Image (cartoon, rainbow, N blue to C red):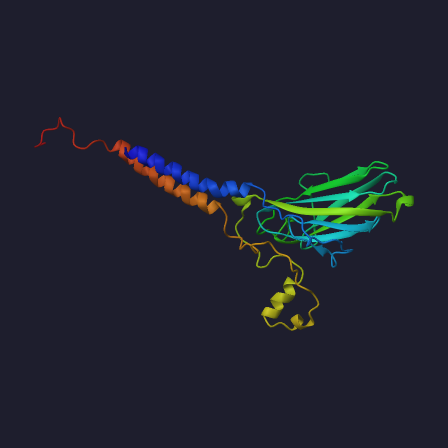
Length: 270
């Protein structure tokens, strides 16, 4: 009976511990397309159009332009950027490419996905995808790991016939993320997310003289539930559950080995 109760408690704890992990492994909810989605693109890092994850941003441009958007990504997320370029009816073969940069404007390699594609002559559209590595809460200064903060999307054509330069194109860009959970957690966290103007804000809070110039504007985009502190992950749940299961295993082992008490064959006076 004691062993049965111990096993039942262990199964219950495993069920409670698995619940957060299952939630982390599912894609984050995406916002439905609405009238608030941007309808233009920036032409540089400084003028990049801000979009939220789950929004489908649209823009009209010309073949040969550099188009920029920015979105927030937090620790534990694996961002996926998708871009669709709608091409004019008549055109030659052309190659398009989507690049993603972090808050330090370091180009981040795509883990997988069609980052560069060539559209055949007279093709109606071309679709690009870039799946980044999981965003880390902390990294060594020399590393190129993706860190929490603003991410920039740059879309451009890399191979274009001279006759097609300047032809009108339509673009759709969307950024989503999948929560990886405690499997990607690391010890430590950034003091601040890597967003434009964060250094100016820090100087203002500390009463620095450079804060009065207002040379940078703090990015207005951030995750819906705010930036994470970096220390919490579902690894804490698994650690606690492992400790409880170890204690139950010790109790169960003692119950199995301690016996039923004083043997009946031993004389009372012995």
